Amino acid sequence: ANGPLLATGDWTKNLVHLAKTAELKKHALTLQLHTAHILSAHASLEQKNKAIQDLKEQKNKLDSERARLLNCLREINEDRDKADILEATLNKECTDLRQKIQTITDGDYAVAKSDVDKLRQELGHPPLPSLQNTLEEKSAQFLKDLRLQQQNAATAPAPSSSAKRSAEDSGADGQPAKRPRGRPKGSKNSKAKGKDAASTTPVAGSAGTPTV
Image (cartoon, rainbow, N blue to C red; front, top):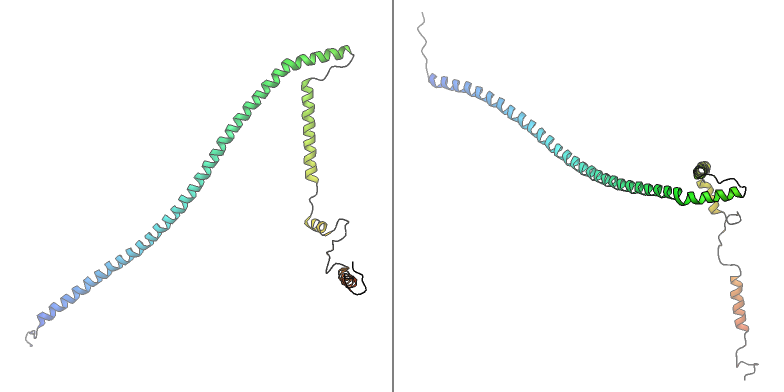
């Protein structure tokens, strides 16, 4: 029978080396896992930072738009206040005019109309129409004229651009306008005649011409 095997060499050192190598692999795997987690977290952090930057830009745009809308709202409120003031002023003026009309109708107008109707009755003329009838006739005539103006404006044909252009190109008598070209007629002859007249004009003191 064989005897027990005896370890030879520095086996203790080798065993320690193997144990440390196994432990190194274990810690290396753990380190790689943590590194992967850190890299993933960094990528997520960059994405979130970019999203935050985009949100800030969007907020700036929204703030600008809100400021513009608030300014528009302020202008609208100012215009509304002006409209309210103008409406109140017009309502007061209308109330004053109604009171004035009523005062004249019940006072001076009533007295004058009574006198006129009395005199017309004595002269055999019918009485004048009432003030209400006169106002209704005026209102009806005004509405009729306004309706006719609107109908005429709606049915009036608009001048076309081609007709307008042809009217501009035509002269006063309907013929196409012509532009003068070149030198006016007779300009050469007038110059020639001027030269001949200058050459034939007698000069004082020349031969054959008596001098004084």
